[in-house]
Image 1 (cartoon, rainbow, N blue to C red):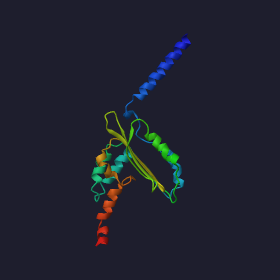
Image 2: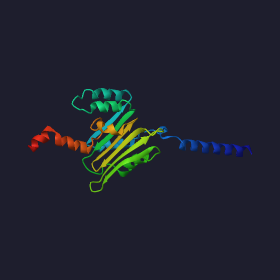
Image 3: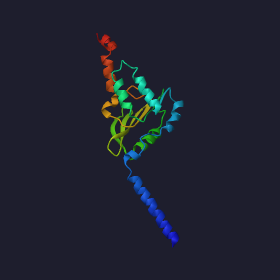
Length: 202
């Protein structure tokens, strides 16, 4: 009889624990992705960019932004990262296509399917075999607690993981910094308005 009672009590405890975990707000989830499985791609890549900025290193990076007086967005980028917990980037460029597997990408998407994450942007080009996706994680107060950017191209794979409160309207200020991809439209506009472009058109 006591064994049955103990089993029932244990089952009740486990059920209660499971319900508690389901009821946890998104803020209890970790916005940092696990990207260690991508390290094996370094041996195949012709260029590797690996960025890990957190804690004191993140604040040091903010100081370097002060030195870039020619970039009007440096001040905006500094204000954006001062409240962040971390910026993590993995970028691999390959000489030949298909050097990473679909499973490598799906392992990241599996993490982004966890509670709290939501996909806000998806751009798939079947002709070029390119996939661009942006995900956000929100906390219990509906504030953004993290962002993930996944860019999968035949000869390049990029994952950007920003942990902490992010203002999406100011996120573009980080483009081109710390290994974060620059907005293609922004990059195209910059090329059109550069002195070199103006000289070529004259």
